[in-house]
Image (cartoon, rainbow, N blue to C red; front, side, top):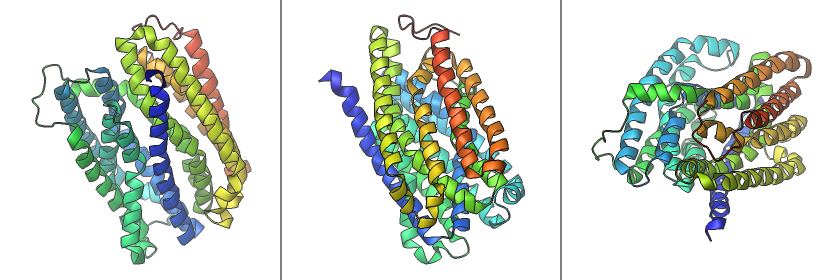
Amino acid sequence: MKRYSLLFNSLFSIAARFVGVGLNFLLRIVITRNLPLSEAGIIFLLMTFIPGVALFSRIGLEQLLVKEVASADQNDKAFHAAYLKNSYKIALIVSLIIMALWLLSTSLLQAYFFHEKIASTQLMWAGVSLFFFNLTIINTFYLKAIKRTISSVLMQNALPAASFLILIAIFWQDFNQDQGYITLYTISLVIAGCLSVWITAPHCNYSLATPANIPSLKVMLKKSLPLAPISFFSFMMLWADTLMVAFFLDTDQVALFSTAATISFVSLFFLGALDATIYPRLLNIAKHKPQHLKAFFWQATGLVIGIIFVVTALMAAFSSPILSAFGQEYLAAQWSLMILLLAQFLRASSLTFSFMFIIREKVSYLNVILVLALLLNLLSNTFLIPEYGMEGAAIATLIANGFLAVTVVLMFIFKRLSRFSDTTTKG
């Protein structure tokens, strides 16, 4: 039965992720069916900015948390609790700094990205949700690290969407009045953050004494910073196109492109479910049972590519009815969607190879690849969006993701990361 544990856990994780996907799709359908294109573009753009800025403020903290806790003794509850508490403290300090910068830059965001179509007070208050969004993500990664995969997946994907949907249902009369949807979105992230702490509490005994081997906040910051580019540049690879569409075009086009991008990310939702199952096990096997790492790595790689290929093919086949669910005007984004689906498949194919850069402590190489891919993406967008509109943004994503996938695999081979017999090699 053990030989099938990876598959079964992955399938359960995918099922949980599917719930999250369904809730997020329902949320976007409610938005697109009840708001004009321009207004839908505003909330979708804000739903891009908040996670992006929050990600920057975490400075790799969630990656460090899952790496250290997943690698530790499963019975060392005091270490788990202390690491999580320290993560909360760091997140609070850095989030407050970033929230202050958000307030100072409100006028710039309003002018260059939202094109004066959002109330400044609404945009300012939205910055308050940054810390609470970070709470949700930190708790998500903690649950992933202790192998509470289903809870982790549901928290990250279903909890924020469910909170927003419930608030919309309760305050429906305010949803499309004076941009009330922005206020509801901000409150929903605050609620989700608080609920994430409540959900995580039974899996973490905060009262346990801090063990001697727990690092200081300063040491944790020093260790998290090298991991930050992995998350930050990965996010930018997903959402830089939407931001640049907002910069070059109007919020109507943002609504169309953001919807196509979100649909294409369904494959990445499945990828995230596989990530939540595979990564902690890969870390644990690399440290405690390195002789089994090679077999597990290739098994996981085959599983990722196989599942993502099937999902991508199905999404492409049903692209028209899926887009029409958001409204007939969203069919204008079909070509963008087809290109983006291919781009996300290429990106997903390199997932397990990327994990090995972290395990073999060669993160610097992965960071360089991500930076180059992002720069290629930004440069491509700059030339292609003014010429081809949102289809140009999709092509830019395809170019960057293709470069990323090919380069990661080639570097994996060139740096001999496939030598699984020695997982402690430094670089």
